[in-house]
Image (cartoon, rainbow, N blue to C red; front, side):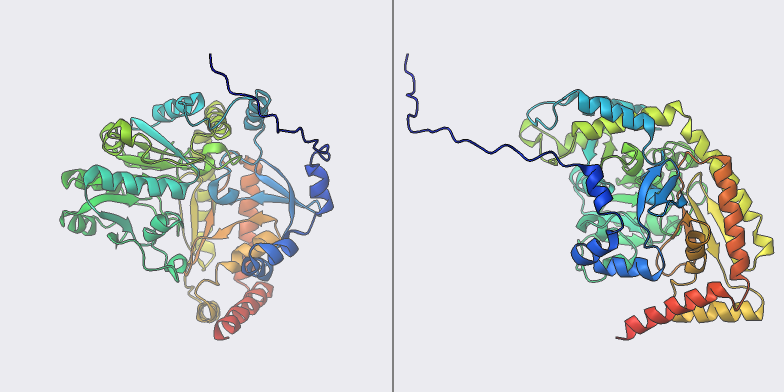
Length: 482
């Protein structure tokens, strides 16, 4: 038997002993409070300036459930939950225990030349929760990557080029997803966008049908509740959209990145419209309970078979970190926690408590125009008041900056009441709530009491709330003039 000779020229090289392992707790403590200094120098100075201008430059050092604590020990109620990522609350102990146990198991991940067990188990669990027959699952690292996947699938499966999306939609900021995002504030400076992406008004079935009749549409992608503005569909809109798509040979892509995983009181928000039959569903955000980036795309068998049509095409769509074992374990733990704690039902209860409590304020406060919600996804809309003094204030604010007025609510909510919220989009007068599904009754009372106090302050003109907003508006106006 032939044997290869040993290479006699190889020499053993002594390596120095490694330094002690990184002490992450000590690192955090040593650099406590340096957040904005570091970001201004190394990450995103413009965002630092924005946060400092509106007084959101807090340094948070601890998180649990619906709460955050800053370096001063102040406790905050998180009604934003990381744009919906922390649907189960922050650092949920059940999920954390599963992940600790998983790390202690020394389990392999991303072998690649295998079929990983945990992704198969998570796919099986996700399919059980779908309202219709969806047969195959592809795992992504984000919602935007899920939208990119859906675009590829739709074009490959139908042989058609066009993707229809809605005006004011938000589907992500990667290039394909941005081509389907209807907010020009995100698109400015990044064109030209992908061809064959056409926008129609949300909730407009005649407009959808007109586009489908052109015969070149691969898919219509829609959020069952629009994130920007928290716009709800009319009853029957999604059901009829699915029927029209099927009639004209196009796919219905249901973007549940923000609305899915129980946020609206159903596992998928599309379920509120009856037995809708989407061809592709995109999930992310709460899917890992916020511990690791992960998303999922579920589709019908015939679509999958068009994409992965042979052994040669078995990895024609893939991603390096897709099906990572830690992410899959987090997904399984999140679904288990969602079920055992009955958080989907809880989302509907919490949403109704908040929504009805806010709606009861409308007759008493002129600026409060509308409150709309679906479970724990809520938009609080302001409108022009009746009285002359308040109408003058409204006009001045909108003259300075069309996105300015809602800051009169979110700034004092944070500064005075330690509650984190956000404006629901550019150039709209809507405050958006995405609270975690683990809120308790005391949290609901905390928010409702605080919001009424803020409303009362907004109706005192002139007053401290207006002074702050006027200063911000003047600063924004000056910056634009430079």
